[in-house]
Figure 1 (cartoon, one colour):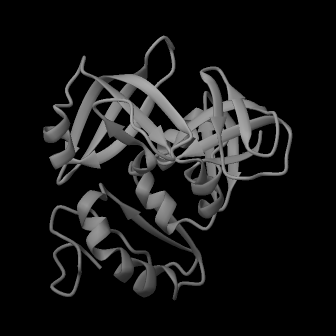
Figure 2 (cartoon, rainbow, N blue to C red):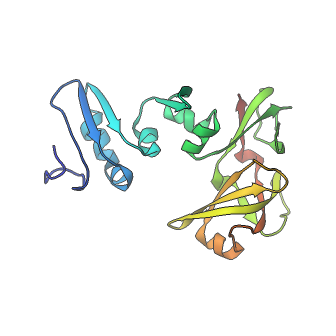
Length: 220
């Protein structure tokens, strides 16, 4: 099947190759938005019903996370994590893997069933049973931003300075630097409306909070 085939669900710019060989099928070319649009068709029409091996050539981590049965992460020429996509998304074990799956990740030491001491202080997490070396992870969408120190329930509160803002559609990824903590970074995901309302731009100070229930702690 080629990209110019009228029955092909892919745009003409895609470079698609399918082999009659029963042992391999290859898809080559940039995925991006077209992959998202036809991902279900690829999975069910070409992957699920094919008994042989499938090699997907892509530069988009989202393709690997959504289509692979097992992932192997390489960093600096060595394997740093291996397992099923759901495991990598829930429990990244290196900053590189956390960057790929889009989570904030910090190393620390679990002091008790709720607190992990990190390089930038104590982080209160959801209840856990382990002690000792630990990771703490939370999604950027769990990081709420305020112009002044908030009152209320969030157990984790930090004063931060905005390092950058990246807008994608109606959402924005805000890169933050906790004050007095060089080398530590934090990412928040908010609406574009929030960026405008809070006047978020590089150099602006704000307060970031994360509820303990949104923080996962697990053994390193």
